[in-house]
Image (cartoon, rainbow, N blue to C red; front, side, top):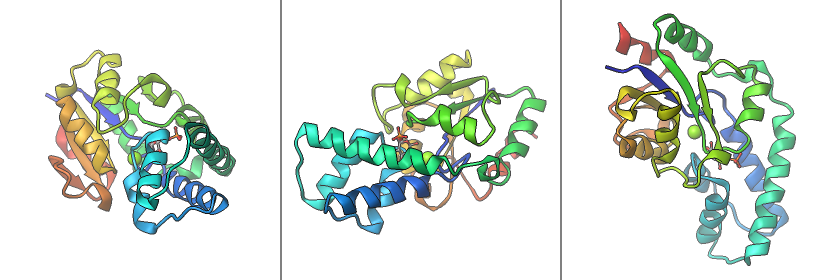
Length: 211
Ligand code: BG6
Ligand code: MG
């Protein structure tokens, strides 16, 4: 029986993924590095340093460790400036309704994000304190598709991963959920065909599981 829901943040609760893309693109321009449109979806769910590696590999370029750190920091500064524009209106449609319905049914909820900025984002969109647990990028050592983030989120809810549903918009996140033993619901085009048990159009679609 499913007793908990583990929500990815970027692209599931709020559309910060477009801000990540803007910040990577602008940083690449400043560093004279190519950033193609098809790189952006590959960065979903991937930790910051791993994003740098992916961008470099696709650009066929190399940077020293010091330069990689500076590149990632520059992107993050830009990204955090963009986050200043985020408000409660940036919560994606159906999210509040879904959380409220899960609360009413006694289903526990957690956020499981690779982002070190997750607490700041939750504060800005007014969802701070709405979940029993929040796992962010500072609490894990391995990026999705490793299952660490979902293992920890389930543990903080006092549940086993197999008792949880993961909601993800990234293929790497769906793989991570599967490896943890959780059931996965994929939302949006990038997670389609990644092996999730459910492919949904709207976040409220998950509520049919508890009817
Ligand atoms: C994930 C995003 O939630 O967080 C990725 O989907 C991002 O695109 C990752 O790279 C790390 O984010 P941050 O905020 O720690 O740089
Ligand atoms: Mg995501």
